[in-house]
Length: 412
Image 1 (cartoon, helix red, strand yellow):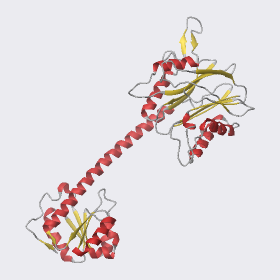
Image 2 (cartoon, helix red, strand yellow):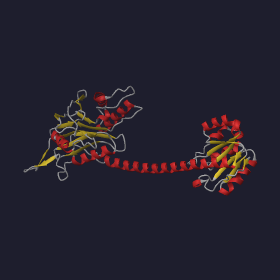
Image 3 (cartoon, one colour):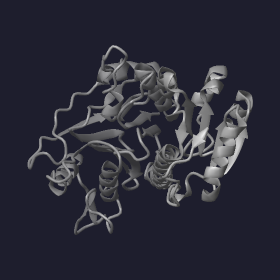
Image 4 (cartoon, helix red, strand yellow):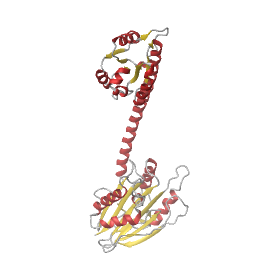
C-alpha cells in the first residue's frame, strides 16, 4: 500500500514528459488503485497486470515508460526483472517492489537488468523521488538516442558522399575498353576504404608511345586520395593541361617526351614533404614504344616490378630509389628492357606484399611473384583478379590493411 506523506508529487516530476505510461504488476488491486489516485493528476496513464504472464507480455510491447513489479511476480517469472522493452528507444525503467528482507534478491535482479527498487511501505514522497530519477534517466537516454540518430544520419551522408567520391576515383583508371596494339593489359585497384591513396593509369602519349603509372600515397583515406588525384591531374599527355610528360620544342612534332626518371624528379620538386601533412608518395612511371616493344620505366621509392619472361620464372627487379617528397635530390633509377611475345611485366603497390598470414609472416615481393607465376597463362584481365584473391587468401581471416594496385602488360 502507498502511504500519503506531506510531500506530494509536484507538477515538474515528469520533466520533459518522458514518464507518461506506467505499468503496475501487482497481485493486489489496492496498490494499483493507490498509484492511480496519486499519479492521475500528473496525466500519467496506469495499466495493471495481475499475473506475471500478462505483465511480461505488456512489457514486451515496449509501450511503457516505467514498470513497478512486485517481488512475488519476480519469483514466479524471473524474466520480468530484465524485460527491458527493446522496441522503445529508451527502454522501460523497471522498479522492483518488496519488503526489506528482499534486498539480496533485488541486488541480483538489478544485476540482471532491473533499474531500481522500492521497500514497502511505499510513501508518496519516496515514490516521487524514484519516479523523478526514472524521468531524469529516461530524459538523458532520449537525448542520447536523438544525438545518436543525428550522428547516424550524418555518418550515412558522409559514407554516401565518400562512396560517390570513390566511384569518381575509379573513373580515373584506364577505360574498360582501353587497348594497346601488341599488348594485352590487366589492372585492378582494390581500396581498403571508400577512397584510396593508390591510383594507376595507362594512356596513349602519342601514336607510337604508351605511358603508364602506379601511384601509392602514404596512408589511405580522404587526405591520401586528394593527393593521388592531384598528382593524377598532372600525369596527362594533354600539354594545355600539363607539360610534365611532354615539353614543347621548336620543330616538328613540336614536342618531345620527358624521360621517366625526369618526370619523377619534377614531381619530387613540386611535392616536397610539408610539415602539416607529412604526406609523401611512391610511384612507378614508364612508357612503352609500341613499335620496338621497348619499355622504359623509373621508380621513386616504389617496389620493383616483377618480370615474367615467356620461358622463365618470375623475377623481382631490384630498383633502389627514394620516395617522392622526402629529399631535395632523390635517387631515382631508370631501367630499359624489351618485351618479346609472351613476356609479362607486373607493377604493383606494397599493399599486396606487406600483408601477414596468421603467423605474422609477410607475403613479400617474392611471395607475390610466385602467385603471379601460377597465373601466367591466364588473360591479364583475369590474372589480376586471381592474384588479388591469392593475397586475400594469404591473410585470411584478416584483409589487406592497405590499398592494393596491380598493372600488367603482356606482349603478344
